[in-house]
Image (tube, rainbow, N blue to C red; front, top):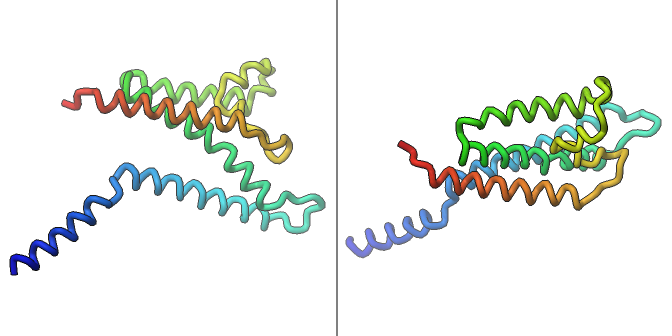
Amino acid sequence: MRDLRERYFAGTSRLLRFRLRQDRFKLLCWIGGIVAFSIAVAYALDGLFPDAADPFAAGDIFAAALSYIPALLLLIGLGAMLIGWLPNLSGLLWLYLAYCFIADYMGDLLNFPDWTKKLTVFGYVPKLPVDPWEWPPLLGLALLAALFASIGFFGYRRRDMR
């Protein structure tokens, strides 16, 4: 009986050793949700205009949606960095997000100079399908996002959680 119990618990500990940690599972769920939502939007937009004279292909719409993911990840990384090191100033991220919206979507209406759009994270995203796909700015945004998130997680772990 003891041998059976030891074999049972040995198998259980092996399973527990290889299980996903909760934060990795949440990240995987977020990434899966973003990809699934992007695919759904691409196919919905492709189905809305089937008889258009020059319709965009589903791949073009999907690429346009995916091109914004590094910019969104940079905002998440910036938020993680602020929460990790300066939690009292983490509300400034909302102010920056409002500035991004105003500069990108209302900047032409308000006659903002072009350099103000480059102060936002969305100013470096290629405007697909009008502009060509460009890897360097998207990779730069993704690397900065990883750097900011790492700095934020390091600061969060160092904080006293009393």
